[in-house]
Structures are given as structure tokens and as C-alpha cells.
Amino acid sequence: MDSELTDQLLRHLTAARWFAGKGRRAEVGSLTVLPWLTEVSQWPAVRVEILRVDYPPAEDPEPGEEDTPWPYELYQLLVAYHHAPVPGLQHAEIGRRTVEDLGPVIAYDAAQDPEACTLLWRLLLDGGQARGREAEVSFQRTDVSGLDASATPVPFTGQQSNTSVMFGDVAMIKFFRRIELGTNLDIEVHDALARTGVSDVARLYGWIRARWVQDGAPVEADLAMAVQKLAAAEDGWGLALDSLRAGEDFAADAAQLGRSLAQIHAALRRAFPTAEVDGAATEAIMNGRLTVAAQVAPVLDELTPGLLSVFADVGAGTLQTQRVHGDFHLGQTLRTPSGWKIIDFEGEPAKTMAERLAPDSPWRDVAGMLRSFDYAAATVPGPGAARWLASAREAFLTAYADGPLSSEQVATLQAYVADKAVYELVYEVRNRPDWVAIPLGAIRTLAGTPADQS
Image (cartoon, rainbow, N blue to C red):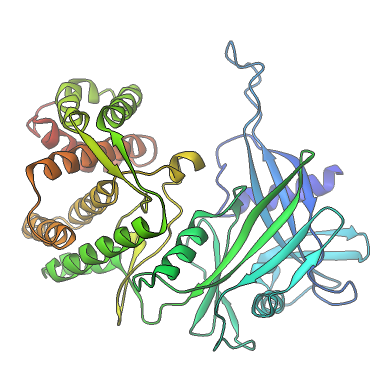
């Protein structure tokens, strides 16, 4: 690959809001070109290109790091090639180059190109497939009846780690930008939940999957998923903040969220394996995370004895584990005229694929929502915030458990809440120091330390 193309790709990637490697020194490792999704004579010419981004170590690596393999990420570049500039697409230009079969062309981000998006939409509805000598792209579909092939594509312009394109009022395609080898968890869970008949998630219409050769070995990954566009949907986080600002109670919505989560958990138990694990293993994991976190946030040193006591309650028994959401908070919920919907089942981004696939206690998700309520109340402080928080918590928990929690459930939940708050504290120390007080206040309460103690 020539240096001009490498520079083009890096400029485009590092400027994108969905690039996850900001702040690190990135290099282009390789570029794998997948088969054309269009006839060569058709404009725009569209294909997927898989960019491997390497993160080499510092010039003076620490002892023992010299032989450590470089970390890398894979990014999907969905490219629409045009033979001339396209008015209105200047913001989506990747670069100008000469491409075999096409000659001199201008490369655009296809997810921003209406013509290219229409092509991809029709390929999905038709269940199309493109094959090359060592690669293929297939469009898998489920029930697409009633979907309009002529629907106008409209890219979503908000902040996302992926890119979503709306098609009319009924569907959207979410293109994964940073891709992971294997089955995408969001697709896997949506597909499994659809088979159980649960109504608390959007319908899955299909997905785009690719196979190619990476570093000499055959690999595969999901590139995109098509789901129901939820009409008149309102973001849960925004609704919570609005209710706080208006001095309104959130209990009814919180209760509905609790019932929705309970139904999702029941459906996940039917769709995926469950297991019973020794609580001592979970306690050890939480203790280990606390030790690492204290190196980033030394304030945890004084709180460690109290937190260890909270985690010990988990280690005293066994835990029922299953597939869970893994990153559940108000921002992963949408209120629609037909009820609450839960979205984004990819798990916590900071965790490895193995960690996100592993069964966990459903109390992990419950704790995530409780911490989200706490963040909402802290974001809109005022004389009614504490009352709002207590009411939302009680309504959510009672609805989720279909009654009061047992003492054992409370102890397990407290451990998961503490573990989540420790994770949040590390995140805030690194990214939003002004927000440190939110998780730290919760940690002090859980550890039995007065909030005004330094």
C-alpha cells in the first residue's frame, strides 16, 4: 500500500467520531478489499474495505514489553466510488485515488451517500450476496415483508460509535464501524429474543455478514444489522432529566422499565445457557478490579475495607448466571407508544468479547440502572432530586422482582452496585474529573463511610 493511500485512510479514520483509538499512535496494518457490491460499470461503485489499525508500543518500551504483540483494531470502511465530485457530499469524502477496474475516482463514505445506501437497502431486502476468490459479503434477512424498497435513506447525525441510516419510518441499518471477529452480540441477542416472542426489543429484519482472509487465516464478522425503527421513541435518559427538571415523579416509568428488564431476562434464560457459579469466584473478580481501580483513584484506599465487606456477601453463596444485557442504563432504553424498548445488547465496550459472552448475574443489569438513576438525579440537582431518586429506585426494584427483595438479593445487588460505582469512578477520574463526586458518593455510602470524610 502506497504512502499516499495510507495517509488518506489515517486522516479519514482519526477524524471520525467513531474512531476508538484517539490519543494513541496509530498505524495502518493492512487493507483488505471485499468483493464489489455493484457491477463495475455502475456508479457509484460500492464495496467494503476492512482496515486493520495497529497500535505500536512506545519508542522506549517497558522491560518485558519488547516481544508483546501489538494491539490492533479492525474498522469497516464502507466506500462509494464516484467518477466525479458529488454535490453535498464534500463532508463524506475519504480521498481521491486510482482504483483498479475504475480508474481515477473519488472515494466517499457510503453510509453518507443516499445512492449507495439505497443500493445496500435493496441488497438486504433481496438477500443478495457478493463473492470473490477469498472473500464474500452476504445479506441475511428475516421477515422483511412490508418494507419499502424505495424508502428514502436518511443518515442519523447524532453522536454514535457506529453509523445508523434510517429508511422511511419503519427501519434502520446500523453499520458497525469497529468490527469484531465472530458473531455480533447485538445481532445474536436480537435474533434469539425474536424467536422467544418477546416484545420489549426492536424487530430484527436482517444483517450483513462478511468472510475474508486475515493474516493468512479465514475469518468472518458481522458488518451491519437492520432493525425496526421505533416510531415516536423517546430516549430514557432524556425523559428522566425532563421529569427531574419539571419536579415530576418517575416511578411509573421506572416500574415499567423494571418489568421490561424482568421479561428480557426471562427470555434470555430461555434462549441461552444458564449456570450456577461459586460466589467466591465473583468476589475475587470484584476484589481484583478494586485493587486495580485504587491505583488510578487512590481515594479508594481508605474505602477498601468497607467495599471488601460488601463484596464478601457475594462470596458467601452461589450465583445464578445467564446471558445479560451487560451495559444497562437509561441511555439504552426508549419509550414508545407501545411501551419501553431495550436496545444495544453488545455489552460493556471496555470488556473483551470473552467477558461479554460469559454468563453473569442478572443483578449486573439491575445495578446498572440504579447507578443510572443516581447519575440522572446528580445531573439535575435540587430539593426534589433525592425524593425522585428514592421513588424511582423503589418502583424499579419492586417491579423487577415482583415484590420486595429478600435480604440475600439485597446483599448481592449491593455488591454489584458497588462494583459498578468503582468502574465509574475510574472512568470519571480519567475522562470527567468534575463528575468524580457522583460515583464516589455512592461508594462512600456503600462502604459505610460518611460522605464528608476526606
